[in-house]
Amino acid sequence: MNYRCLTIVGWVAALLGIFSIIPFVVMGLVAIPKVKPSRWLVVNLRNVDWNLYLNTLLESQLLGLDKYTCRRDGYFSDIAKIIGGVWLRWWIQGAAAVSNMGMFVAEMSSDSFQLLGMAERGMLPKFFGKRSRHGTPVIGILFSASGVLLLSWLSFQEIVAAENFLYCFGMILEFISFIRLRVKYPATSRPYKIPFGTVEAILMCIPPTVLICVVLALSTLRVVIVSLVAILISLVMQPCLTYVERKRWIKFTVSADLPDLHGANQESVGSIKL
View 1: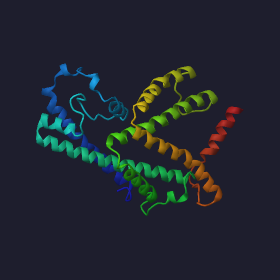
View 2: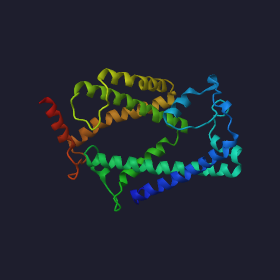
View 3: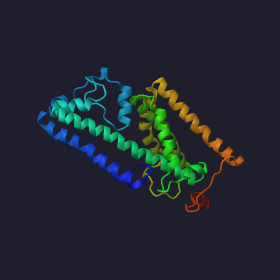
View 4: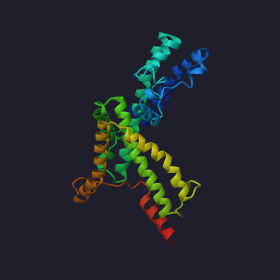
């Protein structure tokens, strides 16, 4: 589908999303007569897997409703069977499979077009910008699929933890850049500016930074190794690509149809100095 057309990917992802949501709506409606508000505040903090909990919370996904009684995969389908019967359990399981497929297809499309855009900007070799006769990025799709295969030897929990580790590392860099731009270029024209001063902006970044540090500290050794290797590769890749481009071993080009962002940035910086 990613090779054929981006429009097909969009419509399929939307339809799969609707199909995935419906059984959870049905389960919620069927469960209304069985609601017990007295259980809402029951928790046993000693039996909480904080590493799994914080990574799951950061991923904005709920993997289990009752973490201290059952932490295994597939618990949503067990809940569906208890509430509605076997038919609802099979529906939930089918929706979960379809949902994963939809997210996979959509993510592959996004990643492959990011590689295409970077190639058209001259950030990656020209061959990453190769398109099929349908206008889709062939090399980007193959690289995206290869990345999925390389991660298939990890468990789902480890993949979530590794993704969050890299995401947290990126967020810390974004916070640093945010504060640095506030201090160094306070008068730069921005489409949107957070209505706080520099001190308030720093204070605003402290709570998420603390949470990020906690998540990183709870990561397993295997996740830390995989994440650090990925970070190391990313740090080495840019100077290597610059060296390869300078030696002209691989061809880099910038599409003439794209706006000159570098020129616009220079004009913005020049106006600040004036």
